Image 1 (cartoon, helix red, strand yellow):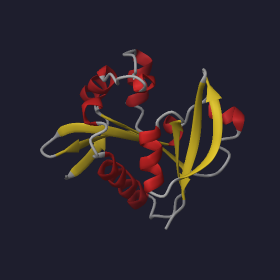
Image 2 (image 1 turned 30 degrees about the vertical axis):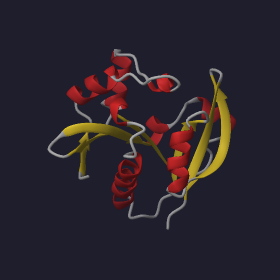
Image 3 (image 1 turned 180 degrees about the horizontal axis):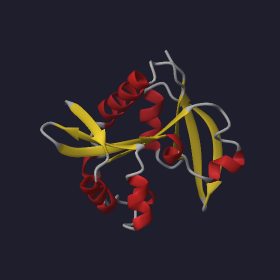
Image 4 (image 1 turned 120 degrees about the vertical axis):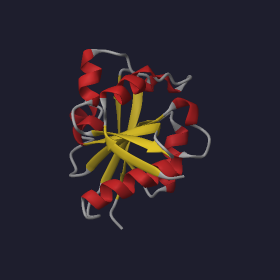
Length: 159
């Protein structure tokens, strides 16, 4: 599977904001709003395509990848590159996540010369994602709660 990425476009952001995940993953659904659109177009989001240009997912980095409630708990006190990602709902649970995550990590490692500690934030109920991240060398770091949902941060040290 051959991936490529580019900075998020308006048309990609419109499509991503319409994605709907089935329970229990509906937490990851977004509402179409001017605020959500501006977030996706803030320069930290990248669209990921497969093949000849089919939108597969996206990733972001920096503050956009953080859950704001994690700041108060100290979950983001370490110096790390925070990353977030999302895959088209119809593609989840089909064994494609490992290649997708590898592409993202490789892309960001090249930009930073490989000397970065990556951090992800994930809802603790999302066992599929936690298993994927663990299989890629991420380890659990901090736990915090927001709106009744428990989140964990996971870090991956440079090789």
